[in-house]
Image (cartoon, rainbow, N blue to C red; front, side, top):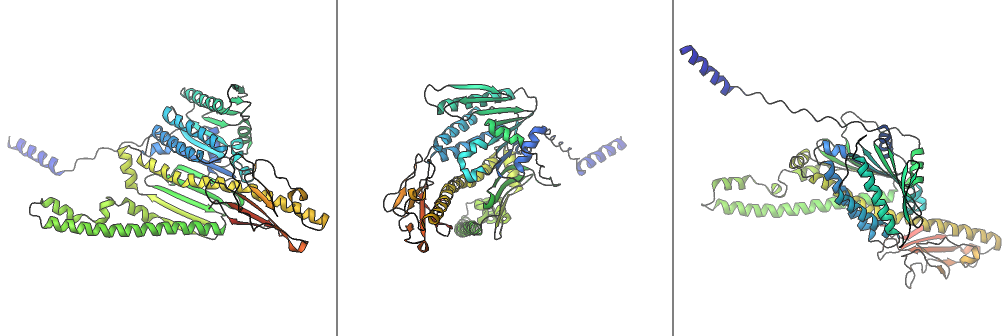
Length: 517
C-alpha cells in the first residue's frame, strides 16, 4: 500500500513539474498546382522586362499568405478598377465614354463575383506603339489574361459571364437599332458590331483565358517566348506587380512582395535627370513634412499624457491598476499601439542617381499577421489602395504625356515643310498653306504660324480665348537669317494650364508650359 501511494505521488509530482509536449504544428498547406504551360508562358512575359506595360496580380500568393481569400481579393480589385475608371470618365473627350462603360463593367464584376478558380490576372500592352500613336491604340494591342484551374467545370460560367458583359457593353455603345452579334472566329468567341468596328474576343486555352481584339491576340501569341525571371532561393513571392517601359523616357516597376512582411518597391531607370530630380525632391519633401507633423503630434501627445498621469496620481479614488497603466503608456503607443507605423517608416529606403530612382517600404510582419488572423483582408485593401493612389494619378499624367506626341510630331513636320519652302523660295513661308503643312484631323492642339492659327478639331478639345497661349511665341522673319517659330497649344487634362510647344529654325523643340506637371 505504501509502495502504491509512493508511486502515485511520484507520478503526480512528475506530471506537475514536467512541461507537457507541445502539440505538433499543423502541416503547411500544399502548394498550389503548377500553372499550365500556356498560362506560365503568358505570365512569364508579363513579369519579364520588355516594351509596353503589364500588370500582374497573383491570387495564389494572397491566399497562401492568409491575407484574403481569392473572392475577397477579386472583389477589392474590381472596386479599385471601378474607382479608377470612374475617375478617368470625368475627363473630357471621347475616351471618357469608354472609361464610363469600363466603370460599369468593373462594378458588375464586383457585384457578380462569380470568378471560380481564377489564380492570376494580367493585363498586358506588349507594344510601345502608344508612345507614338497615343493611348487610343491600346485597345488594338492590349491583351487580358486569366490563369484558371485546368479542367474546372466552373470555367464555363466565367466564360459565359464575360461574353454577356462584352455583348451588353457593345450594344450600349452602338446607336439604336445597331446589330450586335456573337460569332465564332476560329477558336475565338467574339462580339462584333459594325458601328464599333473592333471585335472583342475571348480565346480559351489550357488553364488560361485570353481576351482582346483578334489582331491583338494573334500578335501576342506570335511573339517569341521569354524566359521567366529567375527565382532566387528564399525570395519573397510576388503579390502585385506593375511595369511600364516608355522607351527613351525610361522604365518603371512597382512590386508588392511578401512571405511574412510585405514590401513595396518602386524602381525607375533611364529617366530624364530633371524628372529624377523632381521625383526625388517631391518624395523627400513629403517625408520631411510627415516627420515634422509626427514630431508635432508626439509633442502634443506627450504634454497631454503628462497631464493625465498627474491627475490620476493625485486621485485617491483611481484604481491602482489604471495608474500603473498610465505610467507605462507612451506618446508613441497612443497612436501606434504596436509600433507598426514606426517600423514601416524606419524601413523606408530611398536612393537616386542621375537617371534612376528607388523607393522601398516594408509593412511589418506583425501587422500582416494581425490582419491575417482577423481575416478581414485589411492589408489587401491597404496595399491595393496604395497602388491605386500612386497609379491612377500617374496614369492620367501618362495619358497626357502620350498626347503630347501629337504636338511634337506635327511641329517637326511643320519645321521640315518650312525648310523645304526656304530651299525653293529663299524665304520662310508665312502661312501653313504656303509651306504645304496640313495636320491630320482629330487634333488636340491648335497650331500657330505668324498670325495664322489652325484650331484643334478633336471632340471635346478647347481653343483658348484671346490672348492666345502662343501669343509672342510665333514669328516669321523677313529673311532666312531672321528665322521663324511655330507654336502649338492644347489642354490635356481639363484644368486651367495650357500645354505649349514651340519649334524654331534650329529644329529644337521647347515646352514653355507643361500641362502634365
